[in-house]
Image 1: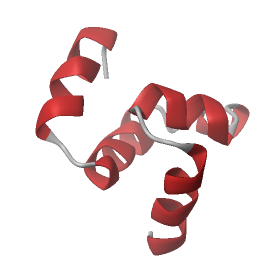
Image 2: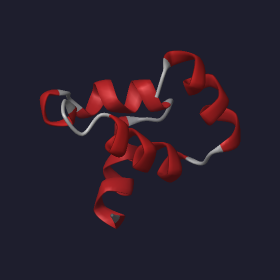
Image 3: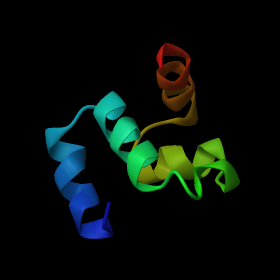
Image 4: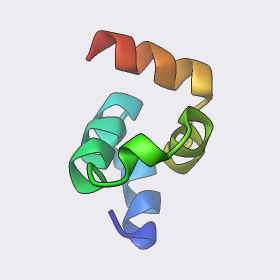
Length: 56
C-alpha cells in the first residue's frame, strides 16, 4: 500500500478491510511494528485495532 493509496483506502474501505490489505502488503515487517504504529497508519485507534485482530 503506497502512502498515496492510504488516503484512498481510508475513504473507501472500512477498518477491517484496511487491516487485511495492510497484512497482505506488509507481511514481511508487520511483526516489527507496534500496534500503535499500525493503528496510526490505518487511521484507527489501537483499541479498535485490537478488536479487529481478535475477530480475525
